[in-house]
Image 1 (cartoon, one colour):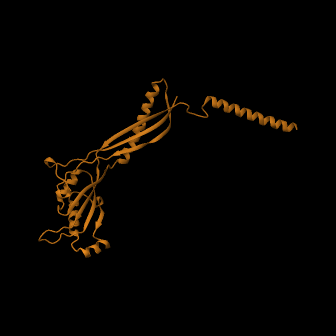
Image 2 (cartoon, rainbow, N blue to C red; image 1 turned 90 degrees about the vertical axis):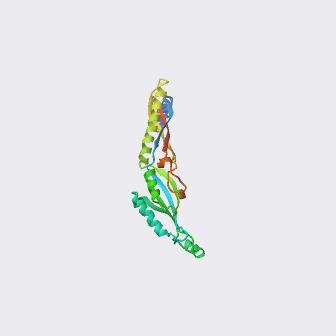
Image 3 (cartoon, rainbow, N blue to C red; image 1 turned 180 degrees about the vertical axis):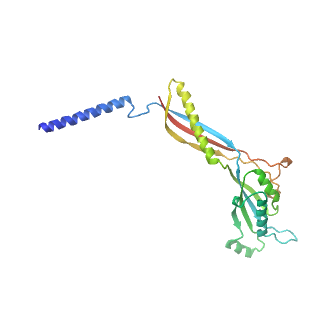
Length: 243
């Protein structure tokens, strides 16, 4: 009996000490909430860059001229690739986006309409508008049905985004410092960081092309119009402790 009483007394003492410790920690607030005072600060950073990767789709089609034999697609393709090489475009920058004329569906339709014209769409990666204009000067105006910019980017896009995110977080910290100093406090460590939301606005300019059949005209004076810049912006929200 005495042994049982001693055991119960020991358990009661442990429970009392535990409850007292929890109560003290709750009053101080640091164990239950290590950051009782915080400030949430927003930071942003933005940058405008000139694209150096311009993706263009060029649609070429067979054609007929009165009194002349049909200009077939194989010859048009060969001339186009030769023109690309002449302006410094390597094979790695050229790919086929679409090809009508080398499939069963096309062959069936052609039997019903022997004069059907085959076509191909190339996608070409340019480094600038001047190189684009140089290629257009060499294109077959009759075969070129469209010359369309589909997207723009930058070769250092990943690195530029990383730098902007860092600047956005640094801007949030600087703001947190002067806001806490305004109330006689000091900014502590970062508690949480929400990764910056990405905002990108690609802005295109009309590119000066010589091929009227492609739907473009040259700018005044014959100079190529450069691309507008791509605008990048990142917004971040950071929670800091107040010391």
